[in-house]
Amino acid sequence: MNESAVTEIPKVKTLPDAQEVTEVTHWTDRLFSFRVTRPQSLRFRSGEFVMIGLMGDNGKPLLRAYSIASPNWDEELEFYSIKVPDGPLTSKLQHINVGDQIILRPKPVGTLVHDALLPGKRVWFLATGTGIAPFASLMRDPETYEKFDEVIMMHTCRTIEELEYGRQLVENLINDPLIGEMVEGKLKYYPTTTREEFHHMGRITDNLENGKVFKDLGIAPMNPETDRAMVCGSLAFNKDVMAVLEGFGLREGANSEPREYVVEKAFVGDGI
Image (cartoon, rainbow, N blue to C red):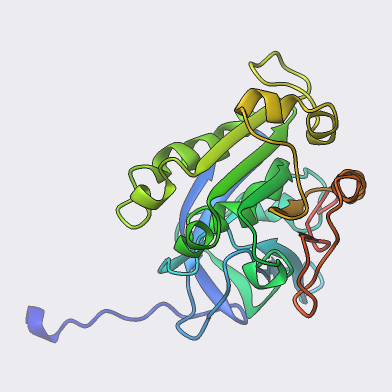
């Protein structure tokens, strides 16, 4: 056969709003990340989420809200997920491979965006578990370092291995050709564990309330005049952190009314 006559047959999309999986990484037996192709029409602000999923056993799309972990300039989309053995979606999603398809509804929304915060000098990213996903996007966005003099990423997990996704991301940022120079000297990473011995331990709320994080990083306590915060975790975590932030004088904002802190209430938790 004449090679010039051979044409590549495009892959048939078998799912609605289908995107192809390009990479899968299993970080622990409970956590994995994956990358998929990005729809040409998709525009989003770093920190937003979209609905993704697979077809359910009933033949209908089974969708959940997932924060986009990649920055808005990335040519692909990255997601970070927990594995729930009997979860309707993740029991299937955790088995995806490169070349498989997922459903991705290209309508990004969310509150963890710069537009929802008043201008400030220091921003806090506060997350537990896979709640680091939107901050994985924001930490790789040049706008974050243009808007703030200091960026503090507090991430708490049960064990050291559960921190690995965030640790590698932060360490690789300094070598990033796009924002490496912007990140240097501005980003402070404060990971902690709650169940395994580590050089920093304890819940985010405790480390804020007792002042340990300020002492460890050699920085001033939170001040509503200069500090802004974004929160992403379980519903219980969000509620506890909101109380702590308001104790420092920060007020909750939204896209329509920017203030000192914002919370992502659509975070995917247990049972997914």
